[in-house]
Amino acid sequence: MTRRDALVAAAGLGSAVLLSPTAASSAVRPIPFGSAAQIETFRADPRYRQALATYCDVIVPMNDLKWEAIRHDRALFDFAGADELVGFARSQGKALRGHALLWGEALPPWAREMSTRAEAERELVDHIETVVDRYKGQIETWDVVNEVIKFDPLPGEPMRDTIWQRLLGPAHVEIAFRTAARIDPKARLVLNDFNFEEPGPGTAARRKIALDLCRNLKDKGIPVHGIGMQAHLYADKPLDIDGLQNFMVELGKLDLDVEITELDVIDWKLPADIATRDRAAASLVGTFLDTIVSVRRPRAIVTWGLSDRYSWVHETFPRKDKARARPLPLDADFKPKPMMAVLDRYRRSQS
Ligand code: XIL
Image (cartoon, protein in one colour):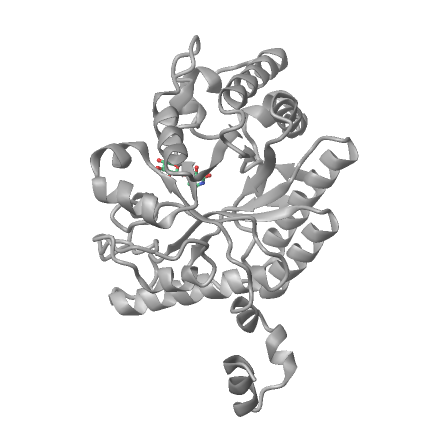
């Protein structure tokens, strides 16, 4: 009898328990773990570089593949930051995700001012051709489109209002995937978006739209390999466990992978006590991942940063009491927090 069987027997637990999300976690194969990396911090802080090297199987340039970074001048492509992070990842034997080929945000002013369909299509296609080609064979997975789904969709209005939607209509999704696939047929192509996890009809609609967009691509013979769940989890909001599990089932029916792409915990509404916050964050991440894994094994689990010293949550979700946010698996001194212990249950490289 294994130790686990003995524990189950001693506790008088039946086999049904083994099917519960929590129990499933102990039996899964390791899942590649990674983090988004900020170039400024990467250049400035050797502890940050060390943490990336130590903990990550996968690196994602956090901002340096966005249009704002690459296309600040309309006439040229500036790959300085992206090249540096890609070079580091490759020298360390890490895999790479590319984020993101199309997004309605982080655009340079000239791109926000495009005014015709032909101009938008020409720029989008040219951008994707150039960027995907540069990193062909190096960046194996691309967030092809990011946040294209409306925040709170209305019936018949699934798409977010962006420059791409205004000028190209819903076809922008198709154009982006088709172009990426043409340039790098071996790349894994992902539709990335946020809030697939909260209860409520708006989120359910978002999940359905994500699936519909992917089904539509597949029906047209355009490759799409997975859905990226950003998973910026709110510590003060519940998870829709049934909704998440059904989402995984539906992904499976379409033969799509799931990737967790921007995991962190927004703790702005929690009490200040650090131990309380860290426990809550770890438990939320554990429940979220266990729920996903109980149905479908993610291709990767990626956090949006590694250390609480550096996170977008500080600025975007500031606490009223001015205490620093604690969204990530390492604390501000790069010490593992309870969230890292939860992630360790899934990570490939134990350090
Ligand atoms: C954020 C970065 O973390 C910040 O450094 C930057 O100033 C703004 O963008 N969803 C996304 C990410 O897809 O690209 C965003 O990243 C966070 C929300």
